[in-house]
Image (tube, rainbow, N blue to C red; front, top):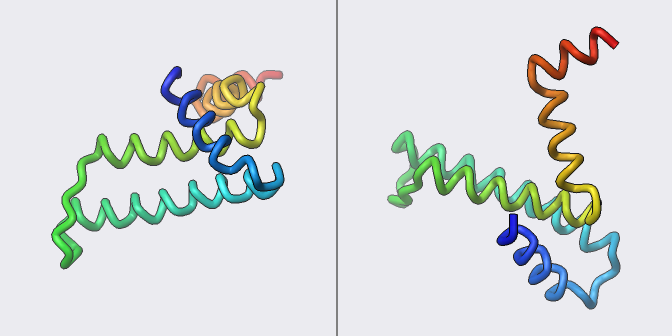
Length: 102
């Protein structure tokens, strides 16, 4: 988690000249960009590209996770970690069963 916070601080410092809402929108856009790169990597894993890019699943996961966590940190700097945990729980079977029982 320390690397995540350091990456957030560096990105925040680089965008210090921009309004907060613009930084949030740009960071969410970064997630969309990473999703496009994930699709490119998936094509590369299946030998569907002509550019010879080689990717691993670990690279795909890392890029997507970092972009997503950074976007969440921009939107809610104090609650991003808790929000991620709550969303993850709601999307599990146990979380859905608990919600249905309530």
